Length: 287
Image 1 (cartoon, rainbow, N blue to C red):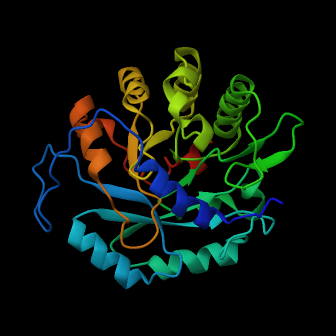
Image 2: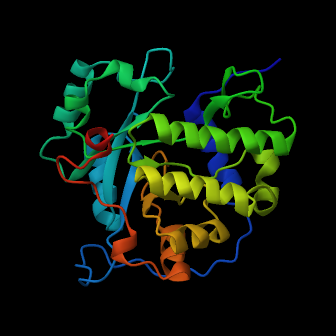
């Protein structure tokens, strides 16, 4: 029997698995809490923070302690998407935005599937600082919508899966007005050891070309340790912009070690890093 799990439970389990990945890593020290970064230093912002029952006050305390600014996101899309909270109308989105007004956080949503914009007007989405999404929900070989974090998900042929997975990345960015591609290049557990083999230069380039075409930033995930550095180097060479995200629930949110490693290994500068666009230039307004 396949027992369905929530994305939240999946994320918690995957965090432990991600910690076991072996990478060539050299850790840099984070700036001291409360210290003003030099003008040319990259400010650390975790754009992938979920409240998930945690009070905003607790999140802000963690933000201050770690000297990492937070961008808070809530799942958004049709009620078909099962989460403890799923924003599905302009009124719900307005209430969410109002709950963050005046707080020292960025306001975002995690858009679900390809039909999330049927729930909202462009005018209300434009009140957000950004929209992020991932490719964890995609189509199977028969074209059916499947969720990679469900216990019943099966990869099948790895090469065919990768081709379908890459194609879905391209479709997602073509059709959806997003600012950040989250959990970028993540692979299911059975494929993670084949990351470099499966993310061939041709597949990497297809995603990079789409990212550049549609002006999407690629999230560097401190939970899943992706994209790995070979992928990141190709993206940086092409001029891709990066954002930072943890997608970690609870006290671990704002974990910055992998971001710092990427900054050092790639020689990233402020100009390489995503910042929310001003009014009139957000993806929802450009697309």
